[in-house]
Length: 247
Length: 248
Image (cartoon, rainbow over all chains, first blue to last red; front, side):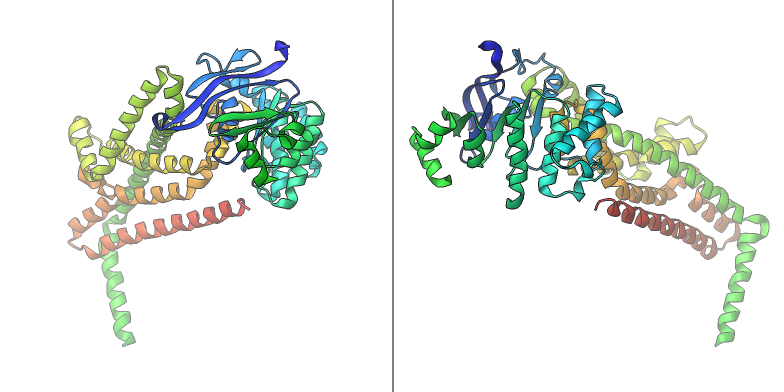
């Protein structure tokens, strides 16, 4: 059972301004291979901070994060090697505007995984094909719509063949009619067995795809459960209150 | 009326010939212009190298101080000291007149030098480095932090992220400003005469001293600077439009 645990978080804390603001206040959590964990909660609850801590874009104040058995919060750990195995998708896409779509996707595998140009490009084109954007390989990010940008951002991360994908509100910056195309890509990814951690406000996605839903508030995990019980039978009053507002 | 104007013009050209052409005195200006170019390009080269170094240290410190403090290690203190040195350099260089820096370089630091041109290149280069550093720093800071995070999240280290993602975007953003710094530098070198260098301005002044005619040589100098700056500004304008086009 323990071999199955991909990410283990122990008593994670993130404090700002000398402890006055507690963005994360003692998080304990395990994420197993193949799980799709969706994190929900009111804004300012620390869910994005938690997600960004998992690949150390936020350096925690204290606590430990184990990725595949290695403590990545240890100063001696080479975080760059571990980030290669953790894909991340941002709210604002963050495609590189100075590179076309194909270069966006092949730069990292060619530089970091020492893949040949042909190998990296064929992999990239295959992934682009799967998200329906093969014909946009030569386009620059500024020529794409929001939904297209986010789909490229997802496959850019997949080009590194990560073991887990982290999604930080991937549909929040999209026009409503473009949310579906991005969620479809994520659903397919989940069906293929990718381990995913998703911060989102899309409750439909959580209900349909998640294997586990986590509710965070004030830097703590308040409740976690399978999606059915989570939405139909919430226990904590704060979760009940939250769900009554968003559903 | 027309006769008067033509007469005045004729007199002006006659005087111009006496002052500038006779005795090949215009050659002073050509030699001066060469020196002005040597100093400007040399100083710009030093300025850009120095600017990149200082901007790299300042931004690395600003971007990594929090993470480095939390992760510990000696790196933080090394970078903090380097950052302090850079700040001191920027304050002193931008806080004192370039003529004073030039004279200190020539009469104090390189008191044994007999050729003023390398000293002028050094002094203007150090001075320009401070301004170029701030141009680069502003450029790097203007790039969305998400770009940096996206690079790091793919597994690029700090320097790779800078090299492949941030710096190429930064260069595009600062190129017009950098060219304007070049134009400013070209005009600033006109004080090189203070340390015995015959630059364009000093050459004009020399002709004036020999002919006791100030108007024509100084007007010639002014026109040459003006034409050079106008050509450069025109080129910067073309460059800016090009860059904007590729932004679509």
